[in-house]
Length: 77
Image 1 (cartoon, one colour):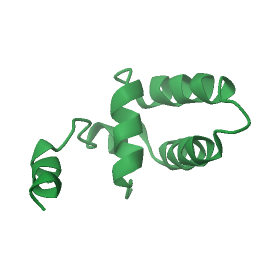
Image 2: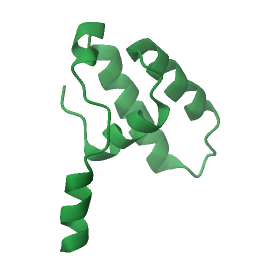
Image 3: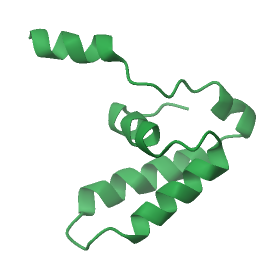
Image 4: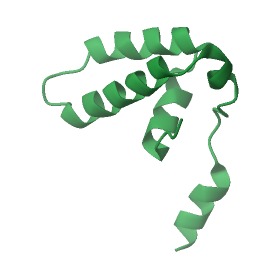
């Protein structure tokens, strides 16, 4: 499953250790969003959709930690 950088960041923030727990946490957060938070709602929806389409086994292979090397490369530019 190909997650965007923003989706990975969102998953890192709300990670509970399990795929179903993460889906639940994201769903709860989504319910708290205001009507003006359209971008975050779309990002959350796409992340939940991708998580729902994968198995727990596939989720276990996802590395949920920030890639600080990429951030350093961006800062250096």
